[in-house]
Length: 285
Image 1: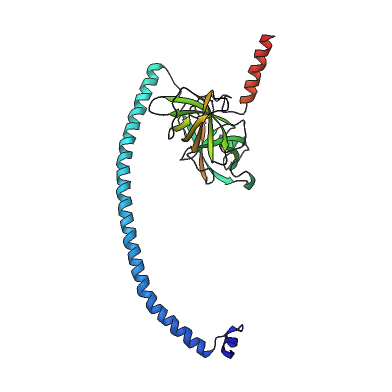
Image 2: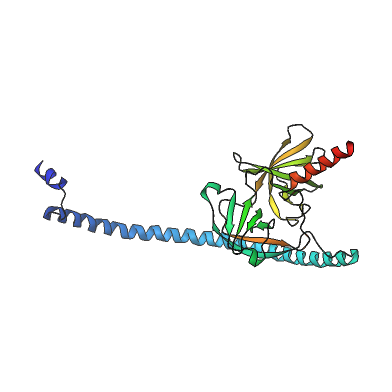
C-alpha cells in the first residue's frame, strides 16, 4: 500500500526502483521493436513495389489509349474546321477563351451555393460566364468586382437557375433543362425531357450550348435515375454531378467566342416567359 501510494503521488522525478524497471523494460522493448519494425517495413516496401508495378502497367495502357485518342481528336478538329469552311460557318458553340482563376473564399452558410474567385472585371470576367473544372461544369458568374468574381454553383437552391442540357446515348441525343438540386440525394434534377425519347441510367449529360451562356459539350454528370414529372407528360432524371462541389480550389472561367444572350441559362428566364404570356394575352384581347 505504501509503494502504491508513493507511485500515485504527483512527482517530477521517478524513484530509483522505478528508474531501473522503466529502463529495463524500455531496453527490452527496443530490442524487440527493432527487428519487428524492420520486418514490417520490409513487407510494406514489397507491397508498395507491387502496387507501383501494377499502377505503372495501368498508366502505360492508359497512355497508349490517350495517344490514340489525341490523334483522333486532332483529325476530328481538322475535319470540323474543313466542314465549317464548306458551310460558311465561322463560330462554334463549343469555342471559348479560358480564364484561369483560384477560389479565395467560401461562406460557410453558403458552402454548397457560392464561392469567390480571384479574377474580376479587370481580367475580362463578366456576369453569366460559365465556370468549369477539370471534372466538369460547376456554375456561372453572378457578380463581379474589379479584382474578384462571385460564382453560383449548380447545387444552389435558387429555383430560377437553369441549364440547357443534352443527354447523349448510343441511339440519339435528348435535350432537357437542369432545374434544381436534390440535397438528400446530392444530385441535380433534369426536367422537360420528351417522354417518348430513351433515357437510361448511365447516360452522360452535357451542356447543349443553346442557352447562350454555357459552351456546348461541357460535362455536367451522369444519369442515375429516370422517372416522370408530376403531370406525367415529360420525363424527369436525377443526375450525379461530375464535379465535386465541396472540394474546389482551381477553376476555368469560359469566355464564349459567340455572342452571349439571355436564354434558359440566365436569370431572366422567368421574365422572358412572363413577357411572352403577357404578349399572348394582349394579342388575345
